[in-house]
Image 1 (cartoon, rainbow, N blue to C red):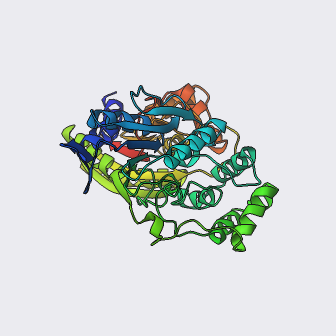
Image 2 (image 1 turned 60 degrees about the vertical axis):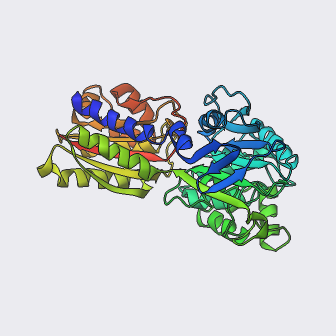
Image 3 (image 1 turned 180 degrees about the vertical axis):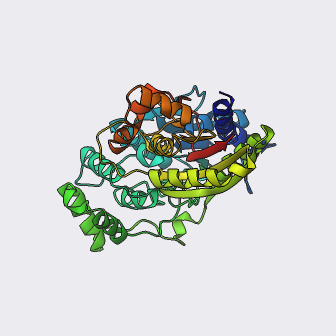
Length: 434
């Protein structure tokens, strides 16, 4: 159906606009011995090395683009990306590790990155390529604890309903590299971080747990979040003891705003959900849709956002063909034991609402090509699909309750499978009224 093809094309246009190759060539330039990164310029001497470090689902693509831009410059470095997101690099080491729960490969790669930073010299320049997923890929754990205990905390947070701001406050206070701590071992005073935002509101201290950004949060904030979601009693004893020591002032806090050791660190946001939405709007309009962006900062439970999107679509039926766009990141409080992700949950919830409405299609998908622990970026739903599902004996409400949207869409149709997109600026949600 043309409507389905249009919806997927609009989503793909959003993803294309935030591809690292495009963004890097726009923001990083090298000419006549001068490296320019956004509004900062650095003279590269014969003794200078440009250290390219990175973490995130887009770090391999970002590194590949940097190698093209800085052809002829002495480059070394290391980037960490998610399994199955690797790309060939000429000068920069690439390590793969687990996401969203860290693993031993992530710990080893992060240890190697810290060793590289300790070997930097005053004339060197560090470029950090940061994208969504870095909170898990930059992996370490507190003294006295072990990886399995940190993995347990990550898993508890992911299932709790906590938003990314809250999760990353806890993560920062279980790490020696997050929350502005990554630059501290470096011997150079020339540092630029190039950041793709996967966080609602684009708060640089939250993206990837802000490894190069001063952290306004405290150990006390981390404990309060764990209390809020009734997780404190489930913490491993070593993790609880670490946080208690921090609250008591027996451990150093993360660097706060104004910290002198971060004065030389420049953080630049180069890609965001807003940029992706504007490209989606432009493409939708080129297809003839009267298009409106509601927001690039939506949050909340996936089922509530599905209701909001459907209501907006119904209010626009007098202006069809029309397209409604939203961006951001929903949450799902997991109560069932099914397989799915927040985008599939939203699309299924919307499908239930539009199963008797013939002219509305809803799509929700992650710009990184990943939705939860599945092989799909997200899903779409419309009346035809939902009616076919009913004919197949599929109980959409039961699948929704079990958080089992993947199995529903696998049987009914509607999964969107892009593979890794090499970028990550949260999710695109859209409704087409035809």
